[in-house]
Image 1 (tube, one colour):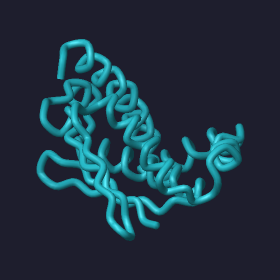
Image 2 (tube, helix red, strand yellow):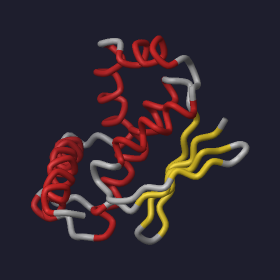
Image 3 (spheres, one colour):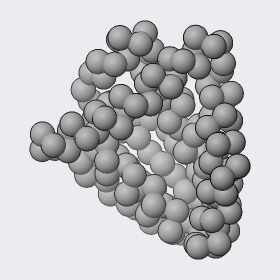
Image 4 (tube, helix red, strand yellow):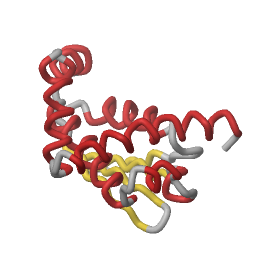
Length: 146
């Protein structure tokens, strides 16, 4: 990953860490933080707009949309198509390199990963797409189900 891409990746993640830290200070669970975030998007018609533009449950388009977002935080993300799933396998930099803002905000990487995964899953669900995100070593596997 070139230096500019790495800096952009840091900016994306470093904007999420304080949100997770604030929720922790307010004694919100990750699920409550996700719900708060989703409500902001939902109230302003984000999901309805997405569905009008791409149709309810459009797994192919949603997986491609997700992949574009992941390219902001990782270098190479293959998309693997199966009969019943599409899998985006990524190696986000935050699974490979230290995220310094986690230290300064006293947040565990697992809490950040929970937030990222639950938020992505909740957004997908409101667009009619079933998504499951898992982590194994330095890989994130996003499985989209038809």
